[in-house]
Length: 631
Image 1 (cartoon, rainbow, N blue to C red):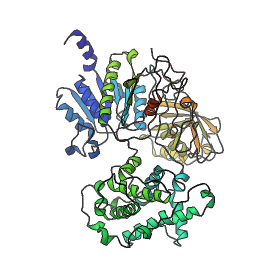
Image 2 (cartoon, rainbow, N blue to C red):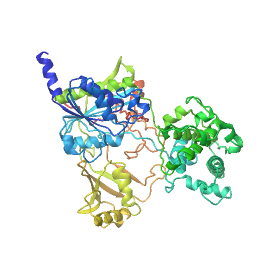
Image 3 (cartoon, rainbow, N blue to C red):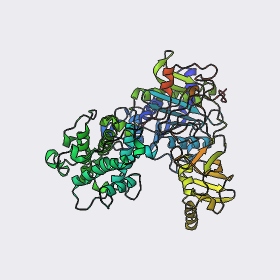
């Protein structure tokens, strides 16, 4: 090896690297790191291997299903690189043991995560530990790799991140116009009501009571009597949610003046009198050790998940799936949540969504398509993961060699632009408006007389600011704290505070109050300026509060960003479904950067859907005019 090669290898061989995530990107990244000469690699991943991972996570085999991703990936790479050190952690990166001191031991952190919350957490720990972070993500053919170095480049949270879209409750429950509305209704309302926590209210409760009145019944229609036949119970649920509820909705003539009227559907119209003789009994279907593989499809002779079922087939699946839940998985009822890898749950949600879609004149979708929508899936492409993993290693080597002028944010496109599929963009300095790395105060508009401290903690501090162990102070008064070292009296006091309105707290929070919110684990602290506001738009501001203070800017070409939840592009909500982008003078990337074609813009815009190893894709053409390239 010549002198130049030895100099290049030195920072690599001596580096201690932390990988977070051992999924689609993680498998390719670990392999590439090992083959690139890295000798000390640590991996954190809380997930276990699933069958659906095997088509793109090539370090895993069928025999590994159910085992730790981090441990199996480690063992697989050590087989062809036995002399390097790889340590695996089958754990959540948000666990207390992975604190700032833990992060300080590494020379660089490489992310291959699948959710915004974990990414924000790692970003904050890297900032606190002053360790460079290389972030990444893929969505189908699209991908990106970004470099974040404290004080030199923007941090991961310097720009607004898109989050899963939400929809107004009234649209979901009363006036769906898209199939995704039907999926949300079937998954988050009906499935949750039938098989989830019985004590948790959802918007079907009101509907159920109205329907019960219509049908002259007084009991909760979702309650199943001990001796009630499962099929008859299924038909009762079917008739109420697809029949009586629709009739009740139609009674409001004002709602349908300018809308297409839905059609009530009853089980007797589409199903035979008895399903047991025709399809066999759910009690007699073959048993399996894995509840997630129980399926109604074989009982009904349905084999192809990409086949489009008609109303009758969907109705049969609805009843049979419900019967199977009670026959085979009765112990789970009351504790279930929807999981895209739960075959029976996907079948039930698909059938329920399609029946509702039929009622409202919305085109039906196959099981394959419905699963993608319900699980927010854009099917992964192994090649994109491999390309992105290679780009991560390239940037990691630059970081280790401290070649700051060579750092690049690289975007992977689906179609060539100027004969290029990879677009490198120079990173930018920290956003002075970022509340994470620049300590800019946030502004919270809230009704201080009606909103409780619990609302502030759950909806703002945890959900939007992503804090795990928050502490909230008003001046010298400590209003709320979480920790294992608190005594019983302190815990009782803080719990009591949670149920008080902000203005009734021991140190009243009113218009003009300034709150200090800290997370000791993340070593993050920020200020929140409180602004009292009486009224909020239930459609556009359903949480009854608005948080602002991070990057907000106009969409490209001055057009307002489109949303499917009817929220305004000016809404200052970090978790809103509004996809807001930045531009200096239209879609041009400052100075020497190339102008993208319209096709490129569409490709690189924020992607809504994710699967188990995907992320939101940022737009490389969104550059604030206040930003400057890193020298």
